[in-house]
Length: 323
Image 1 (spheres, rainbow, N blue to C red):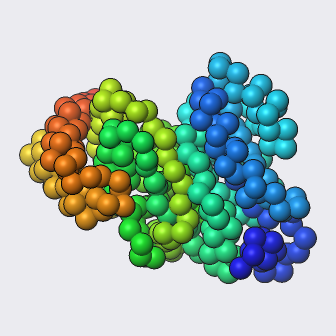
Image 2: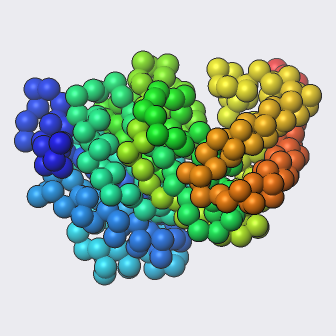
């Protein structure tokens, strides 16, 4: 399917001449250089005679992000934000979107060739579908390890249905998004809760190996550990909010369950590393140190997970006392 045909078919039945057909939304905060590369990767993919648009929500940046967009990417729609987080920024971007389909990519990602065409083609005939795909990591050892640690589920060549899709690589119909929207109370697991609500509403989440983006996280040990602590905390917070999520029963069992979940997730990390080693760019000699670092990452995340659980318990106790 050609890009033009894919986009021409993206209007809902009974609606005609919707232009643009698809809106690509990027939430950005003090990420000027990587955002510039992201927009360059999308320039050819959205240049379909006005049938696609690019929207950047600048969430209160102080590094000249908006000025860069106006100067170097004059065709991009710029929406101001007020530094309230990526989830609210994405919601704001959707509110401004003119397309029937909305596609999300992060400022620290670049779209692989054919990303938008493939995504729109998948969505064109199915309004009860959300689509994502591989999160590719190249570069330093720590960047590639982030790919396994944070996005290990999004590897492999098989088209399949999944339980969640990350918001750095997701597309769906705007009307479906507006029925759910992102919950700004939780970062960075808001996409997990969002996807769980989509599933409850009968939306299929599909992994397509040809809908790929490259992710460019921080390149060092400190960045890797910062992500570990942040995700350890939000992992527990999400499962305390939604007991239907995977691992929620462990989290709600308290400290022993959180430890058991930590061990289980470390083993899952190792399995994904061994299974996807070549695709993830790891040499054989890098596997032992990678396994050690993945295990240490889970150990570092454990105290943050326990703190999050205890904070929730204290809040619940305070509420019970007030009553």
